[in-house]
Image 1 (tube, rainbow, N blue to C red):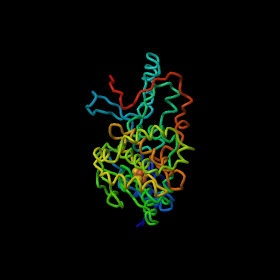
Image 2 (image 1 turned 90 degrees about the vertical axis):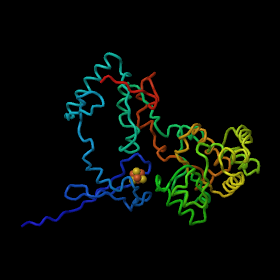
Image 3 (image 1 turned 30 degrees about the vertical axis):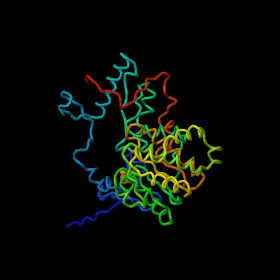
Image 4 (image 1 turned 30 degrees about the horizontal axis):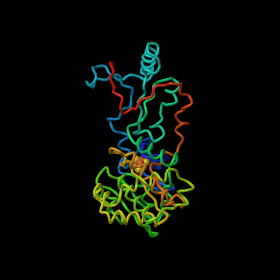
Length: 370
Ligand code: SF4
């Protein structure tokens, strides 16, 4: 009788989902089979934590519904009739169709659709771009999500990811604006708890009393879609009470006079009627935020999910400059961490041909005869 002793191998990896945290993974492999996935406790940023979506990742891996092979549709669209084919057959089929399309209509008649999911931040946003740019295909701008907030952010502070999440530990006042961080951005939370231990005040602005809002020192419920008004109301108080860092504003910003004139139109009483946040709370928030340096804002992508969302992000993103928060370690704002890589390099933009057609992916109607 032979006794088989199974051996567990640990293989290091990273979370393949599109979340910018990119948690460090440990894959536990037993006799060639993945049995468990855990967080890597040695990783300095993600520290062994995994969110609920990935805790049972080994089961996802072996799920019988996963698409593992090239499948060719053999019935009418929507009928669900597919036949497994080899990858060589699939490649030959694609090559033939594309060659025909290019010969008949030109390469711009091909438009790739790629977006995030289970491919990681880098692959999900850019996979295929280098190839399709070389081919001369049309560009589908990936406007499904986060494009409004990123554009607003870049228009306001430029192409920077903002403050390092790790530096939140040094902040004295932290506003988590429109984000249930404990559920969706869990790796920033330990740094916020560290700041809290050091005496920082944590404020959550969110229409819902989420898990994160419950843990905050102050939860400010706000009517959905009124965040720009609250930011303008805060600016109104900061400017009226002369809590502005004039030196910073003079040296490093543009358009202060225009901003001042705009903010003057949003006194706290008017903002209270728009946002549902009492005028006294707007004043208190503005004063505390301006005078407790370093102050930090973590902006959630949820801000863009309403009409004028981009403008809300622009207004909120002006606040740190007004009070000079960017001067300090732990001060400023952060939106989404994935902005920090060079997508120009990854997508091989220089390969693009002049006058290539570009469309917003979210507004393209798919109408295929195949
Ligand atoms: S928080 Fe979850 S989805 Fe995001 S990188 Fe970590 S395990 Fe992946």
